[in-house]
Every structure is written in structure tokens, then in C-alpha cells.
Image 1 (cartoon, rainbow, N blue to C red):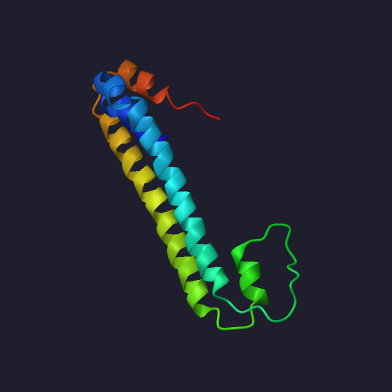
Image 2: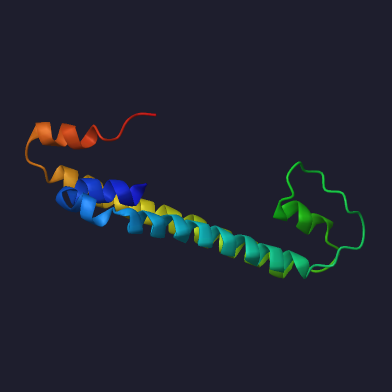
Length: 127
């Protein structure tokens, strides 16, 4: 979404050329593959844990931190993987979105007319 807005504001004349179906499919596939790899890393990490006591998790969803609580072995490597991968995904998403919006805002501020600025800012609805 941030890339779409970046192209629409910063390169409006090239929007249809850049945001074609191939680019959209690549963005969707990239996010699906990224999510799949994230799940696989955590699944493989969880399969290596020994579970010897209770198999009941006091959660509605089977999430990773509750699984680590019922494991009876050393969970430090799994916790490091959990926080490292989660931090990398979170920070990467934040950074790419922030950079995109910084470029958008700097492009809008370069517009000389007030009407042009209002028109560019009007593409951001308040939802």
C-alpha cells in the first residue's frame, strides 16, 4: 500500500507503467513467501523443543510464547529466534513504510501551489 501511494504521488505519470499486474503479483507473492518463511522458521524451532509435562495451553490461539512456557528444555534459542525474526520483520516493515512516506511528504512539500498540495493530501482519506 505504501509503495502504491509512493508511486502515485512521486511518479504520477509513470503510475500505470510501474504498478502493473506483474508488480502487484510480485508484491503479493513477496508478502506470502515472507509470511510462509516466518511460520516455517518458528515451526521448525518449536519442533526441536522437548515437551514432557502438560500438553494444555491456556490460550485460545496456539501461539509461540505459550508453547515455550510448556516446554521443559532450554527455550533460550527459540526465544532468541522469536525475538530476532519478529524484530526484523517488524522493523523492516516499519522502515520501508516510513521511507516511502518520507519520500511522499517531501514530494508534496515541493509542490509550489497550495491547490496542488491540497489535491495530493486529499488522496489520504481519514479512515
